[in-house]
Amino acid sequence: MKTVRRIKDQSRRVARDAHAKNRAMPAVSLPATPTRVKFWGVRGSIPTPGPTTVRYGGNTSCVEVRADGQIIILDAGTGLRLLGQQLVAEFDAQPLEATLLLTHTHWDHIQGLPFFLPVYKPQHHLRILGYEGARHGLEVALAGQMESPFFPVGLREVPANVRIEELKEMEFNVGPVRVQATLASHPSNCVGYRLFASDGSIAFFPDNELPRQPAPDNQRIADFLRGTDVLIMDTQYDAEEYQRHTGWGHGCLDEVVALALAAKVKKLFLFHHDPNHDDRKVSRMLAHARKLIARRKGKLQVEAAREGAVVELPVRVRL
Image 1 (cartoon, rainbow, N blue to C red):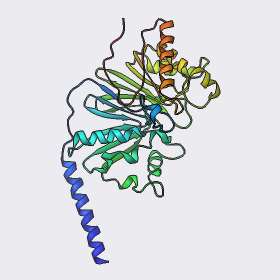
Image 2: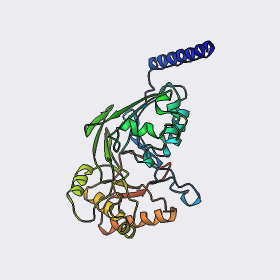
Image 3: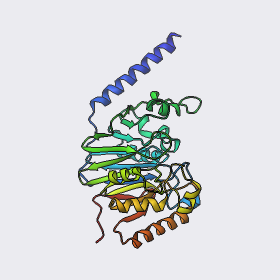
Image 4: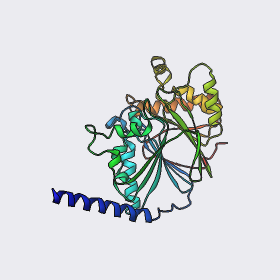
């Protein structure tokens, strides 16, 4: 018993000394570069690996934004695992500081967190921001998926410095980046974000349903998005599919394109691809979106979000 107690005491001292050492080490300063957006997970509902999703990818919602010296992660779906591997390789033993913004706590938006490698390195710092989880607080919702018998390591046991903050205000800052949030139309507490960097803005609505009939909520979201450089938005269904999924909380492609045109968005990324949509279907939806824009003689640029794709600000507008 004395030997076990001595080993535990030594382990605590080692962990305490490591944390003290890492707190004294300054975080790495990122070089001044244009705002960059990278897609790590673009799929909705459930991961869909396999030969039919190779082009656009099968990992669930995760987008990395580097802006004004900040690393901001939008949602923690399974794409977060790959991002974590890249960050650890990039920063090596140097302290990393990152901020994770969660839109909501449905599984496909948080299930990558237990596999995010930086949280297992004591020198790293992760700040998690979001709004109240359904029926429970944010921390309870996030920790629950890592409790026994679901996962071998609890969220409160990881070596990294993880801080969870439940937001109350709809506007805040991540370093010099100003962030606004607004409610999305989706079951449970769900928001969309707009990030204002020094060289443009990015809006992120991975789960959102736009009613087909004009509604006050549509106008509210259009006003929220007005003039944004990059809009990443839920377009899970085409018009025919949406008829069978009204009220499910996911977007119809035609309505999202109309909204982006009305809000004078510069570039739209189709997002939250349906798990039943293969690469050919996503490409057909992209082609349809471009036809809708051409009929309206719009200047909106549109792409289907694809794992590994990178876009930099400012977005150049077609004349």
